[in-house]
Length: 272
Image (cartoon, rainbow, N blue to C red):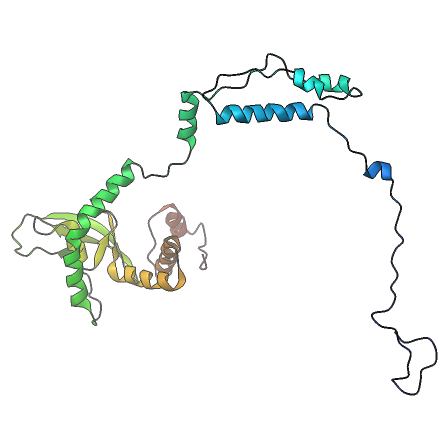
């Protein structure tokens, strides 16, 4: 801070003060020492503290018999000046520490809790996939070798993988999802080629291990895998994106919203 006196002709001769100079602060207000140094004890606090400690000990040692908590200890710790107010908070002499919850209550609480193990339906589904996957390895390897470095095959409306063409065949209609469309395809299964094997032979993966009604293109699943490795996309986002992509190309799923869309009652959001 430069002094109020006249400035000297040279910089070194000027009078200055070290630091940031003097600053002004608000004056401190005096406090009432009686208000800041008075400690108030809540009546009955010590008694409640001892009760909680007794309950904790009872819970830690459930094999001990139930004991009664008497109000004599609570009366001794109450000051004489606030005895009248504290008597209202003294526990009943017949107060008993609650015993352990019954087995029915524990069973009800365990039923409400979220399960951490799969249920029976999930185990059955997992077992079905575990049994089916080994039979799909060879068709998948053959399809990958056949389509490597080549253009994608056009899937016909009726597909089969029977080697002899003499087996009695069963016709099943499957809704198949491709990159640019979804369509219904008739699948002919027989004893030498199960339904999932026929689908995988033509580049389609079933959505269920038994009696599937939909199948997804293997190339579409491979693209989603590469997309997931780079962007950690979710399967729900892919399903919504496919529905939007199909709708823009004129392939609309037959649901309640699609019926309203055909009637012109709603306008589809292109960015949804």
